[in-house]
Image (tube, rainbow, N blue to C red; front, side, top):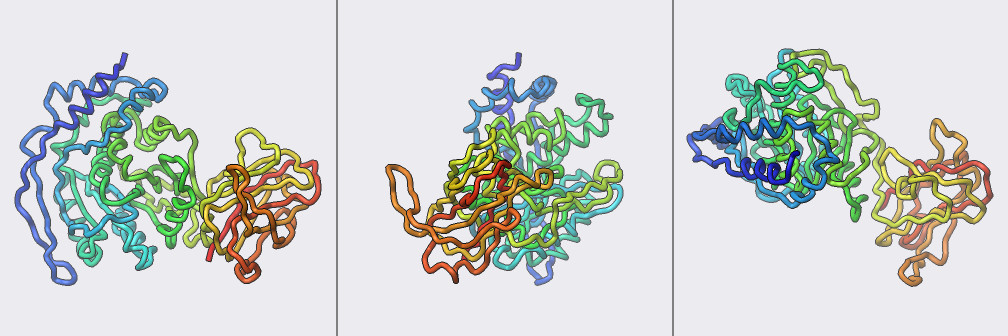
Length: 478
C-alpha cells in the first residue's frame, strides 16, 4: 500500500537538492546595443542520491489513482516549497514588479519544422501596449543539445531584444543533471520506449518551468511552442478571472487541445510542479493535469469559448510526426468578450438537475435549464456593485434543443435596491424590451437608463409547455 509517509519522503527528497554556485556570465549585443546578463549555472551534485532515485522509481510504479491519493494529497495541499533547481538564465532582465499574467512555454528541437519564434511573435503582436505591461513570457529551452540552444537563443535575442530589455521576455534552461532517470521507464499504454521517454521528459520540463514561474505574477497560463494567439487574449482572460471573483477554481481552460491555454493561480504552481515531477513517468502531462484538478476538488472542466489559442504546428515535436489537430472553437479576432461583472443569480423556476442559474452567466460552455416556466417566473441578476451598462445580449435554446427557448418574455433593469432580511432586491424595474425568437439584444443602455443598474431580470410573460434553456447572458459595461 502506498502510504502517506512514502509520499512525504519523496517531497522531502526533492526539497533536499542542493543549490549550487553560479559561474561565468556571457553577454550578447541586442538591437539597442545593450548587454544582457547570461548566467550559466553548473551542477556538482546529482539530482538526487542513487538510493533516492531508486525510491522515486519504486514509487512511480504504482498506478495513479486519484481516489486512492485524494486524502494524502489534501494533507499536503499547503505545501509550497520550490524545487531546488539551479537554472541557467540565458536572457533575463530583473523584474521591477509583479505582473498579472505569466505565459510559459517549453521548447525542444524538432526533426521537422520550428514554430517557437512564431509563437513568441504572436503573443506580442496580439497584445496592446497596455496589455504588455501586465504580461511576462518565460521560454524554457529544454533540449539537452547545447548547439540547438545557442542557435535558438541567438534568434530570440535578435528578434525580441526590446522585449527582453523591457523585462517582458525571459529565456531559461534547466540543466540535464537535474533530471530524474529517463530510461528504462514503465511502458504504460503500450507506448514504445522512446515515446515513454519523450512524454516523461516533457512532464519534467513543465515541472521545472512551473517551478521557475511561481512568483512572477498572480496568474499563469501554459502554452505549447506551436501556438497562435487571438487578438487581445490577455483582456479576455482578465475579464473571465474578474467574472469569477468569489468562486473556487483550480484550472480554467482557454483551448480544448493538449496543454494549451490552461490557466492557474500562481500560488498553485509549486504543488503542480511537484505533482508532475512525482508522477512524471505515469502518463502524458495533459492527463496528469486532469488528476491534479480533481485532487484539488474542481470536479468539472471550466472551459471558455471562443478559444483564445490555436495549435498551428504541422509536425509534432515527437519524431516529427504529422499533427493536424485544430481547435474549431478558436477565433483569431473573437467577438468582443463581455465583461459580466460579479453578481448573484436567482430564479424561481424549477431547475433541471445541476443546470443551475450561474451557468448562464459566463463564457463556460454550459447553460441554465429550467422546467416549463410560468407567467411571472423570473431569472434575476443582482450585481455586487451598481454598474453602467452599454449593451446586453441574452440567447436561449441550443442547436439540438431549438424549441427550449423563451417564447414569451421581457428584460428589465432596476436601480432601487432594498435589503430584505439578508437578501438584496430591486423593488422597481424599467422594461428594456421583449424577447424575439428566444433572443434579446439591446445597445446604448447607458443612454436609455438614467441611473446605475443594480439588478437585471428576465421576466416570463406567458406560460409555456416547453422547457427553457438560457444559453448565455452577456453584459458590456461602460
